[in-house]
Every structure is written in C-alpha cells, then in structure tokens.
Image 1 (cartoon, helix red, strand yellow):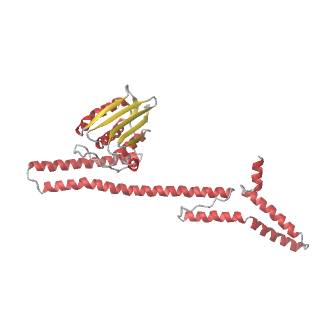
Image 2 (cartoon, rainbow, N blue to C red):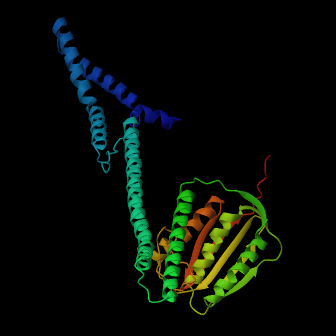
Image 3 (cartoon, one colour):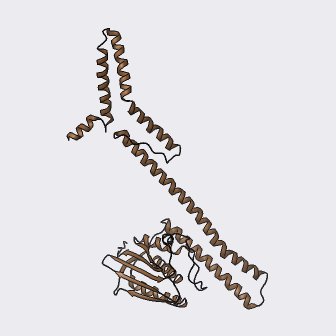
Length: 351
C-alpha cells in the first residue's frame, strides 16, 4: 500500500500526479520570485506570467509525448505499419504508446495475411489453369485425330478413344477434387454424422483396396486392435480421407513393397496409421506435403493409378479436422507414417 502511494506521489505512473506536481512547483517558484516585488498590480501580472512559464516548462515532457503519439498515429495511418512509437514512459501515455504499437502489429499481420491469401489465390489459379489445360489439350488432340480420321485401323481408333476417355476421367477427378477442397477449406459443408463401427469400416476399405495395391506390387498388412469401435463420423468423407492416404502410400512406396494399416483404440481416442517405405524427403518437403497442389514424383507411373494433383492430402487434412481430429506425418529416412487421431465421440441425433 505504501509503495502504491509513493508511486502515485512520485508521478511516474500517473499523469494526474505529474500535473498536480507541475501546478504545485509552479506555484512555489512563482511565489518565491514574486516575493521580491512590492507593487501589487505588477506583482499580479508577473505572478501570472511566471506561473504560466513555469507550468509550461514542467509539463513540456507530457506535451512532447502527446505530440509523439499524435505524429506516430499519422505515420501509421499513412501506411507505414513498420513504425513503432518509443515507449519511454510508465504513465498513461506509455500505455497508449504500447497499445498503438500493438495495433500496428495487428494491422501488419492482417495485411500480411491478406497478401498471402492473394498470393495463394494467384497460385491456385495458375495451378488449376495448368492442370486443367494438360488433359484438355490431350483430349482436343485425340478428338482432332479422330475427326480427321488420322488412324490406320480400328484398333488405333479404339486406342485414341480410350485415351481421350481416360483424359476426361482425369479432368473430372481434378474438378471433383477442386470442388471438394474448396468446400472443405471454406467451411461450406455440413457433416452427415452416422454411428458406425470404425474397425469394420477400415477392414472393408482395406479389403476393397487390396486388388488395386496388388496390381502395383504392394502388399497390404493389417494390424487392427480387436473388437468393434463405435464412432459418429461422416462415413462418405472419412472414407475419402482414408482412401487418399492409402492411394498416397501406394503411389510412393518402393516396389515391391508393403503398406501397413494399424488401428489403436483407447477409451477416449482412436488412432489410425498408414505406413510405407519410400524415398527419403527433406524437412522442408515434409512441411509442404499437406499444402494444396504440392506434388512429388511417384515411385511408379501405372496407367491404372489415377494421377495426383496435389490435393489428396489437403482434402484428407480438412476432413479430419472437420471431425475435430488431427492428422500428421512421422518420417525418418524414407519410413512414412501418416496418422489420424480422433475422439471416440457419439453424436446424439435429435428429431
């Protein structure tokens, strides 16, 4: 209590105390000097003049700080968000300076986010334009050959038709992925929660995916904890997220290779992991894997495997996070382990 009183009296943290001290000291100085004069009228005029001068001198630091804040606000308002006010006072003006600096930092971060968003939009447009143009150019080329009947026999004609059809499927897949990614990333999606046995769902997905993996020389290994695992999830979207991870592991595995699917269940959480062995990548590449349109060269380029457009992991990440879960990668010297962790939540349905 005594310290607080002394701090107030000293005036270091209070402008009001500083003004009181300025008035008091100005009065003391004025009365001391005016005592040397006897004339009443001249003494009064001199008293006022000396008091004003003394008060002005004593309050000059306060006025200077106010001007600093005012000029600093004008500088920031003009667009220089790197400018910061000097914080040399401990009183209310010092707090104002700190708040102004904090405001400038927040504005600077917001402007930077907007710049990154604009840059991201431009990158998205560029990537989409390139990825749409590639299969579209091929389709136009095959259709042009068919229109001109520039084929030697029916077998070559059928090959052109098949190639054009495959390219349209690639184009459709890219458009579907873009549409899904846009909806998920902007939150414009309603999850259709259903109570399902997550253990049985994983078993079914692995069973359905096994022929595709076998064609690529990949052996699927299941290590699922026994027993049913009842959860409320959007089955369609979660299947897509897990399928994207399985497809990613198959594409980027060393051949012949293995993909291990593990399911660990606890009282409150469920963790699904998909492991494979591939070429090592750098730490920088790891951090970019879940970014949209980031692509790496697959270990094999089989026509039966759909081409990647760098959206699969981004879509999987958004789907898992919409379920309140998290997804991450553990990577060491070519050993990849993608993990999904979610709460064992049961959503009650209201009618």
